[in-house]
Length: 148
Image (cartoon, rainbow, N blue to C red; front, top):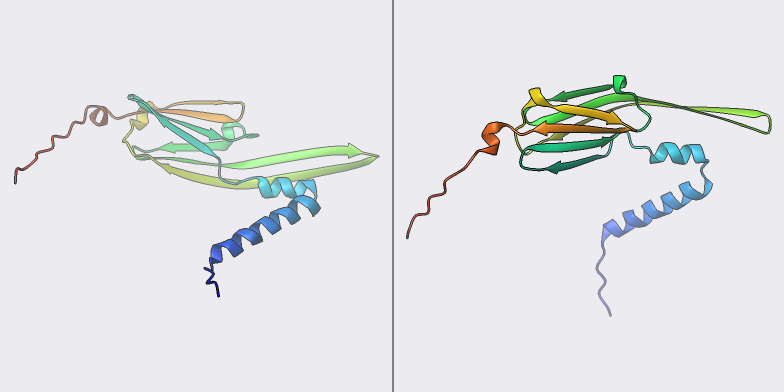
């Protein structure tokens, strides 16, 4: 007799695949769009010697609807999405609305000069350039090795 190892996570994966299949095949397009929209914006962080560059994906939003706060250790972004779509087909008019608040706090691994942040918002992408603190850039730590 063979001994089989039971992994409960496989059951969850199977359930998730079944649900996604059901949603894709039978749900109306509007429901699939809402289910696919995350209330938390996607982010990309890169770093160089001088600064941390943070990009956030915020399609369909206006700059006036965003609240951006920067401390020396984190970036907080919040806002409210307001989306409306309208279609007319065969004499029928269909209007859909999507509203939702979001908030995201991104911790930083390096202290930044929060008074010198540069921001640019274009085509639904927010670019933040966060200059590193001068003490972090020139920080050198001496490591002493003791001989045994």
